[in-house]
Image 1 (cartoon, rainbow, N blue to C red):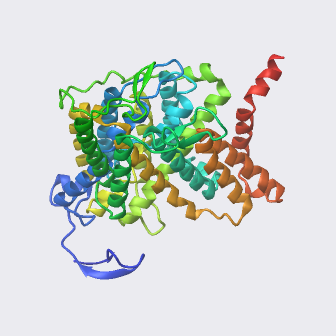
Image 2 (image 1 turned 30 degrees about the vertical axis):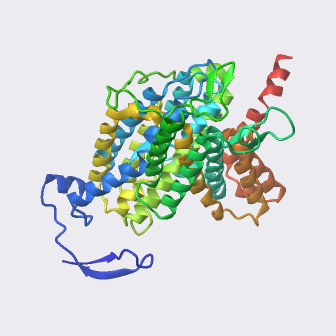
Image 3 (image 1 turned 180 degrees about the horizontal axis):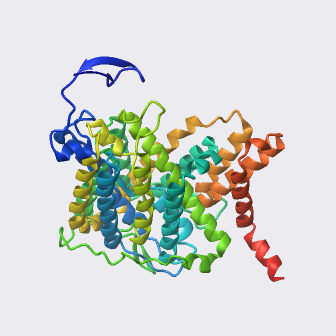
Length: 499
């Protein structure tokens, strides 16, 4: 059979004639997933699905360290084992659903950046149940946008440079979280400098050594394009941490309110648990309050939080689908993914499911490209990835041995990967460059993703009007900028209304 197809490694868009095997389906499985039609095989799909799992399985470790360790405004902590269990469950169920319904090799799990936003910008103002309720609402809004076809209008309302700046800012924010969690960067007790290197302006303690080695190792693996680099970095650094603790008996950094060990381990002391396999604790399922956040922070603030979640989730998904689809040569001549509505439908439901399970919003993972690189072309690969996540449910106790010093290198490297998108911002155009700059720097500097996004939107609208180019700004963006002005001035506004 003679067809034209892109040759891997050839210039983009170059087509050559080639001979290939018959692409007619050989059985029901083949017919349902279009395996032969997309030039793949069951073996190729299984291999690709496994590659995707090992590339993104780190989320079962990282998400609990973010979501499960920080108290909400009421002082409640969700817990590492509980969050690990629901994280693996959501990834498993939604990835399998993507494979069966979406029929593309896209895997889903809790979104990095989104979980940081929920933890540090949402749960800091309300209870975890209230925060997860807002995540559910965000997913429902995206689901509505998909059903009514308004996603294109929302997509075009936000300038591409600001979308890129949001990703870059989240990258810096995640990197800062990693450096602080590992104790590499710490707050100062007094003085004009807010942060410093280590506990006293210098690096000290074996845990810091472990973090530095882990960061270098993970960077080397990523630079060498090693499959599963981030997960391998976490595992190798954890093994090193266990060995260091066994030899030097470092102990925890926090012993009691009256006894602190600056050179100790952050969060977990790396020792093997009594049980490696255990029945997963799924008690967090359904623990959310749909409208509780509105009572806690007010309607305007809650709506802005939902919008911010929706914005990050929605555009991350669009970018991932287009990027991975292009790598797999699954896009049509117009650059669109056939049947994309099915994919977007599952992805929007993933956000709802993530919030309902207290795992934070789940989204399509760019790491799906690893499976595509290994040959995955159909939803069968996603089914394989999801089944492997089901297996991860049984070993969630292992996450309790991972200290921040072993997991934080991954946060720093993921931050770098997000930062690389900054090259797509035109800083020569100040009406674009200044809003992008404010978006990027205010996220880590104010420890708030919302503040960065709001400053970017407001400044972009103001500068465009000042240039006499106000018509270039979407009316929807003006509405959002006005909402952010209310958000930033909510204190004075409330005082004026009360007075």
